[in-house]
Image (cartoon, rainbow over the protein chains, first blue to last red):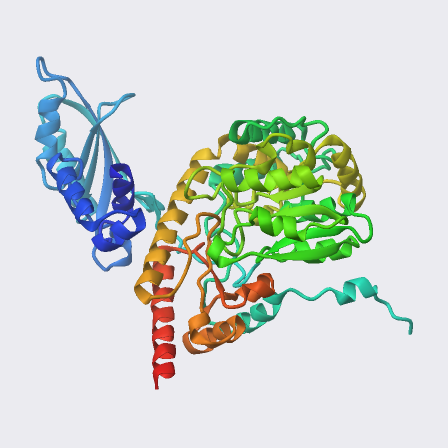
Length: 160
Length: 391
C-alpha cells in the first residue's frame, strides 16, 4: 500500500484522504497513519506546488549550473555542496557522475541576478574550479507533467 | 429498379448504441461515460516503434497471417500468461481488431442452421456476425444474481442437437463480469460432453481486479475445441491501431486464414510493428493502467453505495453495470432523461441485449476528476427521481 500511496500523492498531494482510502480499498485511518510514518521517516519530505511561472506576470529565471570542484580531504564533496545549498536561491544540488561534479539549479529574478550570484558567490568559493551556466528558455515538461499542452479527450463520445 | 440489397443484411438490426450516439454528439457540453475504449494514449515507446517502422519504409503487406515475429511473440505471451502452447506458424492469425476474428470464426465454422449460443448482455457484434454467417443465434440471458456469469445449468439447457459454438465473452463488456477457474471448469465439462466448440473473446483479459484471468483454452481437453480471441486495443490502449489475433487448432485456422487472405489480405503493417514492441515490453504499462482502472472502479462502487444505487461488484474490463429498476423506467428512458437533464451520457443496458433492460453501462475509462463531476450529476438526478416518486 505504501508504494501505491506514494505514487498517487507524488502526482496529487492535495488528494482528499477519504478519497485516497476509497480508491485504494483501505480504511482512512490506516492511510492517515501510514502518511504520518512516511513523514516521520523522511520518505515524504514536503508537499509542493508545481507552478508554471511563465503563465504569470512574475519574472523568474531558472539556470542549470555545472560546477567542477576539488573534493576535500576527509569530507569529499559534501562540505562544498553544503556551502552551496545553504543559499536560498539555490533550488537543488546534485552530485553527479560524468564531466563535472555538481549540478546546481538556481532560480533568480533576472538574468543579471543569476549571473551575479554565479560570478560573486559560486565561482569564488574555495574548491570551485569552474562553472558553466545554462539558462532555461522554455519548460516543455516538468515533474512528469507536460506544460505545453492540455489533455484533450478526442474519443468518440459513445462507442460499443 | 431492382432491390439493390441483400435481405439478410437489411434484416440485421442496427446497433442500439448508434441511436444514442447521434443524440449525444449533437450535445456540445455533455459529459460522456459511454466510451468503450481506454482513455490512455498508447504508451509512447509503442507509438515510437510504429513511427520508426514507417521511417524505415516498412510500408508493405506482411504475410497473410501476420508478421512472423509478432506471431512468435503472441505465442510466447500466451505461453507465459496461460501456459498454452500454440504453433505460431499454423495456429495464430493476426487480425484487424478482435472484431474481425469474431467474424472469421463464424464464417469458417458455421453451416446454415447451426446454432451459436450467445450469452447476453454482451458485446454488440456476436449476434449480427452470427446471423450474417447463416447461423441461428440462441441467446442465453445472464442474471445479475449470478453476477452475470454463465452457469453450467444455463448452458446445458440452451444446447440442442444443432448447437455448434458457444461464445464466451469474459471479462465482459458491458457488465464487467468475470469467469473464474471454478466457473470455467463447470462450463468446460458440459462443452466436452456435448461436443461443441467455444469462441472465447478475451480482449479484456489483462483487465481483471481479482485473480489473474484464466482462459478456458488452458483447461484439460479444451484447446482442441477453443478459438481464443484477444488483441491489443484494451490492454495497451491501442484501439485505433485495429489489431487483434486469434489462436485456434490448425484445421480451423487454415479456413480462417483463407477468408482473411481474400477479404483483408493482412492486418495493417505499421500496427503490427508497434504491437511487437507492445507485447514484448508493455507489461509495466499494462500494470499501471490496470492499477488506475482499479482505483476508479473502487471509487465508482463506493459512490454507488453512498447513493444507494444497486450494483453488483464487477471484477473485469472497465465497466460497471448498475441496476436502475427502482426508478420504474426503461434503461433507454433513464439514459435519455439523464442526458437531457444532467448532460451525462451513459449507455442503456439494452444496447447489449434485451436482458440488459433495467441496467446501465457506465465506463470508467475516464479520469477520476471526470468521474467525480459525472457522479455528482448522477446523484442529483436520482435524488430528484426518488423525490418525484415520493410526491
